[in-house]
Length: 19
Image (cartoon, rainbow, N blue to C red; front, side, top):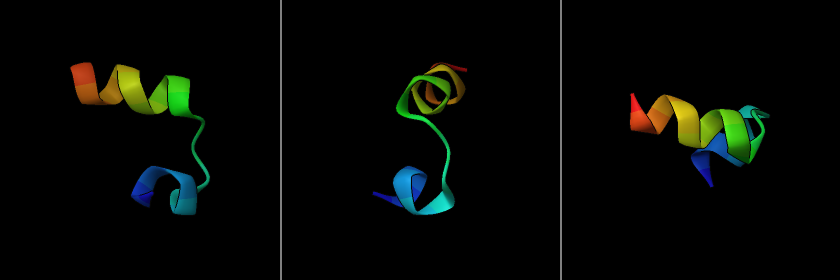
């Protein structure tokens, strides 16, 4: 979704979301 469009891996995405 937005993270994918941004080009950021899902793993990093989840880590940032957790923070």
